Image (tube, rainbow, N blue to C red):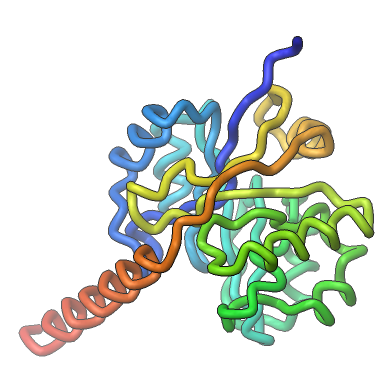
Amino acid sequence: MPEMWRVDLHMHTRFSPDSTNEIDALIARAREQGLARIAITDHDTIEGALVAHERAPEFVIVGEEIETATGGELIAYFVKEAVPRGLPLDETLKRLHAQGAVVSISHPVDRFRGSALGEQLTRSIIDQVDALEAFNARCLAAADNEKAAALAQQYLKAATAGSDAHTLAEVGAAYVVMPPFDMNPAAFRASLANGRPEGRLSGVAPHFLSTIAKWKKVHQLAAKVVTA
């Protein structure tokens, strides 16, 4: 039987406002979990992903999770230049396509997240993306992942999956089982087409931890401003 890899395609570092994951600790945890590769997809920045890629170039894919003007998010891989948050959906897609990134839609129909694009908008742009995130470990309702997977199948799109880890404990909770691939978009696309999402839901607790992390960062920043 050919070798298959487990690849977690959605995780965050301290460069996201709601995560405190240090880069070296995140890489170490991912290796401990037996992941073959990971994508670091911080919110609206590739700064942390670039640092991680420099430290582990054959292990880390540079990604970004981008909030659009609709409030919904796209998630992209092999990003060379960060796309800023708050751009119209079509402009965000245009900038990602211009740099050859592989584009997916993160947790597209998660009913509990305002950052979900939603079914109507997902269907409206589905011809412009490579994949849909068919399993996000932070979804609270399993049915929302099932619906995303069904949409991907209906439109013959590849399926991405990831832990959406904002804490180290979440790393590897979800992943794509896929054939080995070279570190370039074309090879990644070909492998992803033959992949399958797997994983488990993380539950409610990680969402509270993200809120706490975001609150602490806001207060730390405020304290710095006061003492400056």
